[in-house]
Length: 408
Length: 112
Image (cartoon, rainbow over all chains, first blue to last red; front, side, top):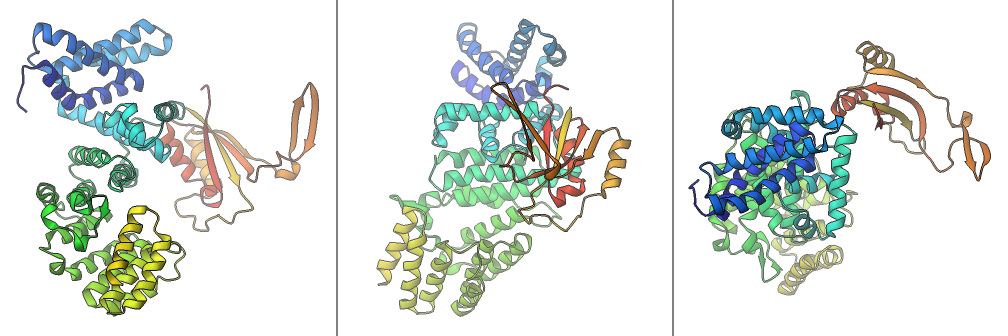
């Protein structure tokens, strides 16, 4: 990254590079989450005072690290209680390591960031708490920002974060990357948190910038776990979906994939997604398969060019890993597109009585699509009426209603 | 870190899993964690019909038969575990047969 002499820019750059590392290592040494975050905020404030006066230091990131560590140590010393002696020792040890080296040593610090990610996403915390902690402490958003994104009062979000940090301390949730035995399962948990953040933004109910935050988090997990393929798969999946954001929602209207204006797709995001190929010699996991599915659509020049045969095969493999009714439903649609609507409708019939699909608009909407392709318009209209009754959001109801008008 | 592990059973729900994969026979579980120093103590407790509730309200002692009426879950046993952290306690609990047959609840001690 290029260096700048502008104090404000230099600080923003240094924080972007270093904030997470500093917070993560201070949490390890002091066991005090608030202190770690406050120390970085305090160092940033100091930088805004001293850098314009004395000039931007040669290595702003190292300056920030050392200042935050000193600040944390000061606070601990001033508190001076017996309980903090250990924390003081830890923080001191860290300061004794040569400052600039400590800031850039990849081995140790990388570990701390990963520890932080796994602790924020620990299954003993509620999902709400995991999401809030990850956005606040890992992504570095303010409590007010996280509250706004989830449409809750700042005081509510602040309570939620406080509760989560208390539980981590009280229940002794470890600050550690899980061992080999639990790693796969716990990594799934981390990825689930990241993807939940993404879908919250994608669904449009909350703030759209959540999708950007999720992609940033996804890149972080890919960087921190370069030998795992599922983080790469998740990042590719999010990018592939994100690439369609401008084509998917036009003037507040939901546009289905088939009717999207493909020139509105974000080519840069598509290219990045395509570049995240599967690591050599792996079996594809659920995120990798979902990414491949999304990319199969992105590769097609237009809707007619879509390779439905390979999409059907991908759904077969996904269903083997995740035998959920929604995957089965999407698979049935792919069968209909690849082998003709009659085959697809047969596959949908098998799902008709599934309790998990009862009350969802997805089944009648999919059936309507295949019926139209089979030329059975009156039946399709019936199914659209049923889907309209069940669709949960106004956007989806509008989209189904438009489709109905076109047909009728 | 010490944890009270409550062993509970909800007889109104048919939630027990007959697949005991990953769990140990209770005697083996006790032997394993007594041996490693994790299990400090523990026991089964008698069922709700043998429970007695004791309360004091406005200075008056009230002794009644049975557990608190509203609770559907029965506490059928408990163990006190000494673990490095919650992850260790989760591993220990996950091997208990009642993880499949009922539900285990880990409550950290307020003071160690």
